[in-house]
Length: 278
Image 1 (spheres, rainbow, N blue to C red):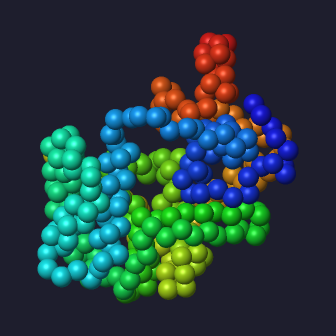
Image 2: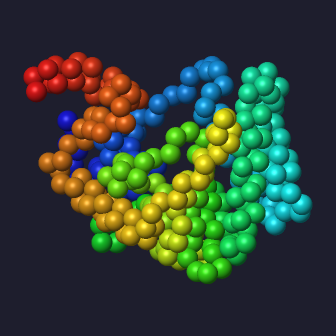
């Protein structure tokens, strides 16, 4: 239950790290205060991380080369070949990943044609930050894509190659990334041309399996953004109190999920005993 002094507590985190802060505060303590970074394994088989990176790169290439000519599916396929690159030499990638990508691309091409009718321009994978003076805290983020809309406002899109957070998780501040990116856009963090109220908050799930893809739009995007921005400030103020500890595994997705820092927090030593003792 570490309780570092106020001066050591982070004043800047990314939107993805905010979720970590809520779910596993000790991981923020270990990474952002102690400066302990998990080392990559020397050799790992290709997995979901590499697949997700390749797909995100393909979609970044596609968005940056708009307006396209012809069928957007052909453009997505071409960008996919470029993004997958040397990975295509792997039999598993050619046999499984690539066909799934093409199925997802077919689904996304139809959505892209619809979105093109309503947007004026986009920003893709752009690093930005916004300073909240009232809580002395800087939020950083890099959205998959933000569209400025012809009718006003912005559409924030998060591409997902895995699961999508539920509305309940978002409402409980367990998956705040998408609305917090919308809050940054509204504040002008991604440039004045992208400043606008959150009109659409969209998860584009690109599985490429039996279901090619799925679009999930969050209800009441502006109200959701307001509430999660309020919760962010509430969280910052909570941890400004030196009595507040960085507790391990405070709200993990599942109890069986591990943290990169469980061995340092010694969770295995006291976690089960504490649960048995009530």
